[in-house]
Length: 342
Image (spheres, rainbow, N blue to C red):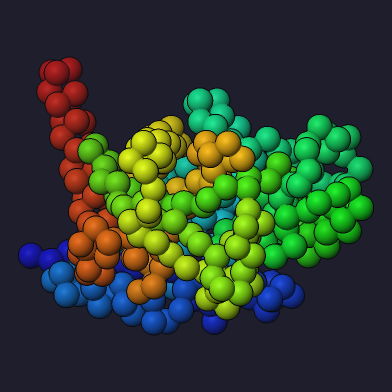
């Protein structure tokens, strides 16, 4: 028999008006087409789906619906804890859900804290500082060029073609714009000039690593190490993708091993996509992890799944099954411990 599944999400069209002062304000959120696609996929798998848009009535809806599990893609609206809110609410109500828990979602959205945790786990990251002023003395410790972005955003929000900065005067000007428009600290890192990759992982106990994807500049983008995967690039579909990426086996193994290490170290669950870029010597460095990766028909995760032989319905089912198996495993572990205690 099918399950009664709640689908939690944020629609682009529902993005609050007070947030729309930046052109990329709704970049993280979903189109109706994406939500309908996930709903249709779950229904094709034999499940009954209840759509639950992110709004003030959502807590009441969750309390009133008798749900077996929630398929969660909700990002929240504002603040570095926004992605944690729905999972925390679901845990309050005791409702199982797909994806990572509130702690992992909060940690990974805060890029600075995420990299501190990753570095503590032995994962190579770019040297950087998180600041609220261009006068921060720690900036003098960095070598130019540097790269700047908001500390707690996703989907390339706040990242522009000029985010690669060559000198202090330019840094001061761009930081002022970034801090003013995004109302949060900025992460400033030494720029990594090498190739950029992303790796998707699905599962838990024995997770599946999908084929490595390389993000390449399109014809209208810089063709050297200055390429930036910016909001303009994404919005204009100016990038190219290679999946499986054309890389030597040793480098591919290093990238996959780093992605899996990050997935485990940050305690991601069910699904995540990890971004990695090479430094000037060709060594992989961790950029960031997205534990709520996009699920449109043309999202990077979807394209990587296709390269692995998974159609869209199979991808949605793989994520759902990972969550269901995790809950079954936890339940069996609980009963085993209970039996051992007599």
